Length: 262
Image (cartoon, rainbow, N blue to C red; front, side, top):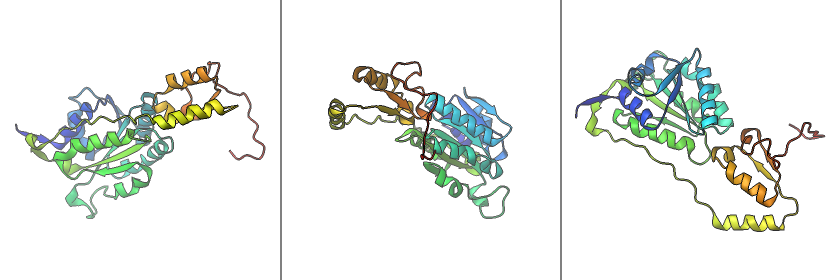
C-alpha cells in the first residue's frame, strides 16, 4: 500500500475525529503536520501568541461541547500555552493540546527547545500522552479525544516528537481508530431515591453546573423544574442550561453575603 508519514497520519486522524478548526501558532516541530493539514477540510487559525490559541480552543470547547484543539511547537511555544491549559482544567473544558518536541534521539543533548514538557504539564491535565511510534499516532489521537470528554471533561496533552512525525511507515501497519464515548447509563435506583426525596422535601431547589451544560441536559432540567415546581440556580459555567427568562430560573440583582468569603 506504500509509505505514509507521521505528519500525514496526524492530520488525517484529526479530520476523522471530526475536527473542523485548529487554533495554533506555527513552529518547526509541528511543521510536518501543517504540510498535510492544508489537504484536509480543517480550518487553521494561526494566532500571534500560543496563549491566544489555547484560550480560543477553550472557548470552542465551552460553546460546542466538543474538544477544542490547539497545536503549538516545542519549548517556549509549549510554555506559552500553560495558562490556557490551566484555565481549561479549572473550568472542566474539553480540550486537546498537541505539541511538538525534539526528536527522541536528541533528548537530553541540549537540542534546540528541548525540555521535559510532559512532566511539566501533567499536573494540569487529565492525561499527558507521548507518542513514541509513528504507526501509533492515530491511536494516540483517538485516546486524547476520548479522554477529554470521558467522565468529567477537561484538557488532555498529546506530545508528538518531530522525528516521529517525519518518519514514514508502511500504511498497512497502521490501525485507524474513532472510538465512541459511551454515555453513562441511568442509575435507576438512584433516580428512584431522588423522586422519593423530592416528594418528601418541602423546599427543594436545583443548582445546575458545568456538568449539566456539557451533558446538554437543558431539556431535562426544564422538564423537571416545570413538573416539580423547582427553582433553578446555576453556577457561572452552568448558565444557559435554563434560559434566564424562564419563570423557574431564579436570579438576583444583589446578593449580600455577611461573613461569607467569596
